[in-house]
Length: 213
Ligand code: DX5
Ligand code: ZN
Image (cartoon, rainbow, N blue to C red; front, side, top):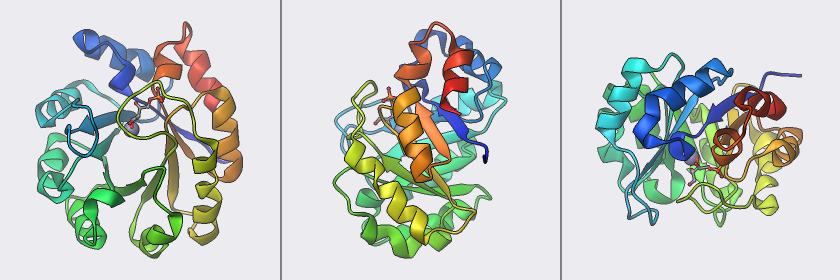
């Protein structure tokens, strides 16, 4: 079995104790750190910005997996890349017809580029971009908040993506992931799992991360 990349979402961490909560998941075997950036326009919530990512970079020992849920992502690629993002994922719905341009911009900083689709977006629309990208992020909840219920119909998109993907493409899922929904997604072919509430609300974070693999 190939290795599953587990990326705990710090949206479910205690922001007043962010370093402590980042170390908790690092020490428990997390592969990446998922950072949800929301602008109050693309999604109805506001979370983390560039200065916070920059500070996290100073203390984190694992790659920063930055999920941009923002309008006009092209304006913010450079600041987030310079702040220390290792993987920058933007939304297809926000990129409009500029997916290739934004992907090239991300690559110009020597980091990985990911493209994400919301639950109502059809997979067919993004197939043509797969070769350019390092990662596809399939949202299994409406983006905006942690702790929502997994939408099984979205997970089926993994199968369609897998059909057209090369072996190098990382297929990540985000939203409502726990030990049960993770199994569904990895069976379909996902190899990276984001989990916020499931990991941070658990009494045994190490066990929670292990249960996702
Ligand atoms: C939702 C965010 C997710 C969120 C996941 O818009 O993109 O990363 O933190 O949280 P859980 O795992 O609790 O659904
Ligand atoms: Zn996310």
